[in-house]
Image 1: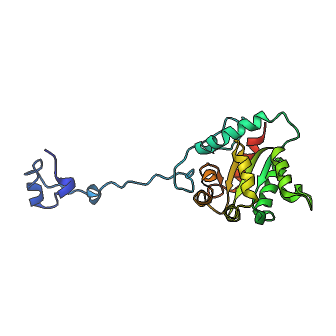
Image 2: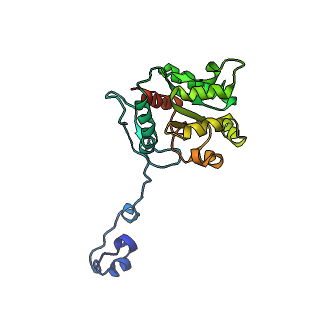
Image 3: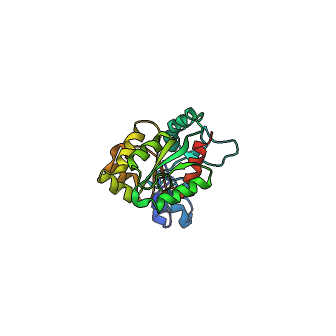
Length: 228
């Protein structure tokens, strides 16, 4: 038998008398907190992603001993094969670290900002604004950039998504990068869900997103990724 006080209360004589355990005993007055049901607090984490999923973070295999940069498990899965290609191609000093794939409309905005941040971290970047001479064949120059870079990063913005819909040059760049494990998507001012609607293959890949961390933190990860 169990005492009915936590459920029915013993604040009256009849309530005490009807309890199979306490019936006939002296009256006991329980504090109001005794009757309150326990509150279940929602678990929160500073490492939750933009999708609301709690994620643990750790250092990557290629992180230096003194590095403070942490990655989610999905980021490590995405970047590990890319890092393997970086290591394979590290013996060629003529290669740029990164080929920056972006929409033309972003060339003086988000793409330039990303290029400048990468260069400030010592990363050499193939960037159309400075690497394509006036009057040259853009597609041919893009092919050169792809061939002369260790990895590619694609800056996914609303303009980039619109360009994929119109099957512009970005689609050609993507097809070459997707054929190998060389591509790191960086989603900025949009989402992977929006990307999947226009490019299921690219959208199915994990990547880095400014919804989860500042662009400066993403650039630090790219810089660590290409450092051998």
